[in-house]
Length: 109
Image 1 (tube, helix red, strand yellow):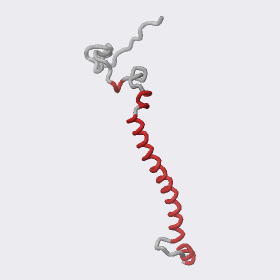
Image 2 (cartoon, rainbow, N blue to C red):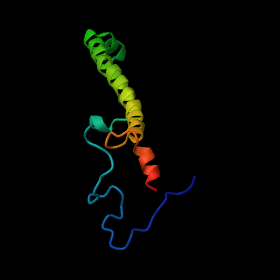
Image 3 (spheres, rainbow, N blue to C red):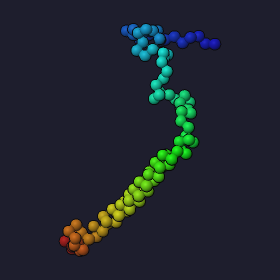
Image 4 (tube, rainbow, N blue to C red):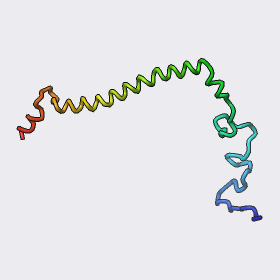
């Protein structure tokens, strides 16, 4: 088995020993990890998702979500295609509303 890995401290390093009292971040913990530092394995089975999915409040929330998302999506798609169609129509009609915008521009050349 290889020996312990030893490293020479940088010149001016006041903490040549890992875990020394002067370390900025000591190794180990006295308290349990905060919730935002838990890994997926440490945080598993915190909520019973089958029970949550069966709750009437959750089902109402999903229904409200669908009531918003479906009309918003339809509006967005209609707006997206209408914007292109109206933009093309604007060039055909002309900025001032005259129908001969392109023809007038061609004869002016």
